[in-house]
Length: 202
Image (tube, rainbow, N blue to C red; front, side, top):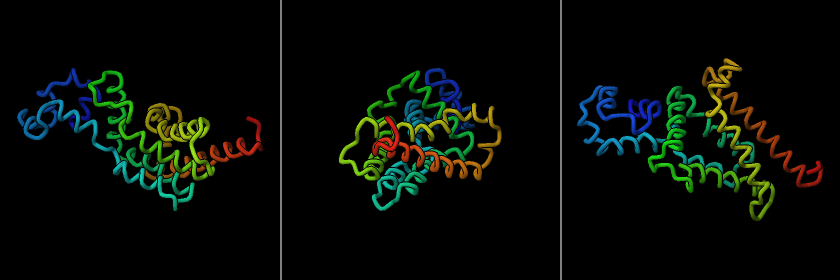
């Protein structure tokens, strides 16, 4: 936690092992004992999952027996559950943004730190729903938009707290968000279905 806070607020290069040890109230040798060095601690902090196991979310969204509303509920819960940890999720988001701006080599654009598997699971879910053999560009666009609803809960958290105080104030509010995101997501899917069937103009 000390590493998460300092790395998120100051970055890797500007955070010293002495600062880390003092913040954690441990001897500086503890860093090398448990993590090898500062880079090892940073790696542990950066790669630590914020919520449950990402592979469990991927497996659930990929489950062909799960109906679309239930699968979207799992999908959005994967974004919202970490927010119930309070400051931890916010610091993790800041750390990930800082890594993109001040790269140390841990951010892999090809794998996108676990993002790609969940995206591919969502694409598979949408393909099954629309009965498509392969994903086209519009299905990719739909997946990006659906994901955007969840991502904004993290990226826009400070703005939301400012313009609409109370919407993120408790676990119960976050559970309500999950219900609403599923509802909004289903509306997006329905709009794409209507476009594909010619019920609305492209």
